[in-house]
Length: 410
Image (cartoon, rainbow, N blue to C red; front, side):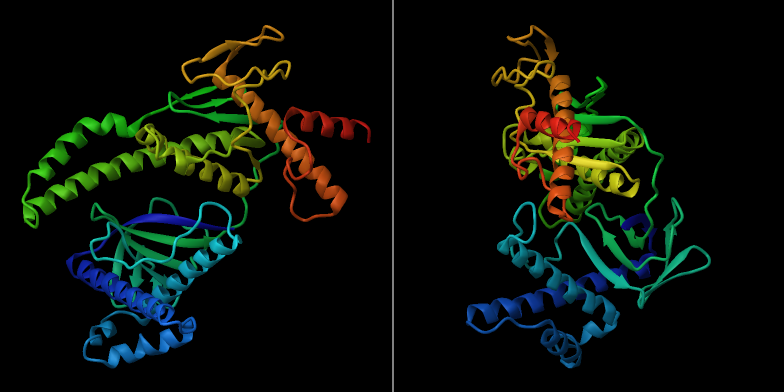
């Protein structure tokens, strides 16, 4: 499997200037190629191929008077920018055809030098790892890297990134083998929330750190200072950097906490099940700030790739599964409940439930049912991909009882 390893980079003044020139040239190639395809589509002409763009808008552009400065950067930077544009178009077309899962991709957009994130991508022909711990980048020089951990293998590509706070990072893509952890009997269902970040089916509650809420007082002061500066002035640029650095600190703290929490959950459980939340839709409600501060999407993605890396099972259940309405003791569906009700009593068996813990237990049961139904469906149809519970023709706790009865009869 391929993983990314990010490290902080400290270029000197000359190297920062060279990187800025490389960012600009890559952006110009992207915009020129995108404009050629947009104009061809508007004129009713066939789709412009990458081969023709690579020939007309890179080598010939270098020989023209208006684009002669493209020769000041490595040719790999320009070619990789065109390949990134091809990947963006492929994602867009696959999304239109339904070949790509998840939220729909829009068409590629033009880039601006005012974008908060600038980057270039390089293959092994344009960078080299030096013995002294530095990274040589073609037509930039030897970059000083802070190696927080060693690379497990030789990298296949490198991305140099400059964020909104003015920090530089080197992102290496490395092909690694799975680090399979010892087998465990424990399985866990997770119910994500805002008041409590996560409740596990074993009763563990993980408090929400609320990094953005804790930093709001300082951010409010910095953003107020920024709004008072004259647009276009140097003082406004300095104030913008201060705001960006504070936001970067919040994001770094949240990411570090997500990594530590997800690693602990994957290490302690053989299987992890979560609900497929519509984070993008929830981010447009009145709870948007709290939803983005929690970072559910990033946390679930970490659980998924770490489970694959360490030989664990990761599963999701449908977002319309009534985990908060069903009694985890007897299976009686007690109906929807407002969010202010955090504890309720089952009308059928009289069991008293904590809302979030009951939902986590039901998530675990639904995830197990999905997995068992998938295994049964794959065994019957000899399918390579495991079918979900709804594809196998059973839903809810009834599907779980159906599969358990089928296995018991074997």
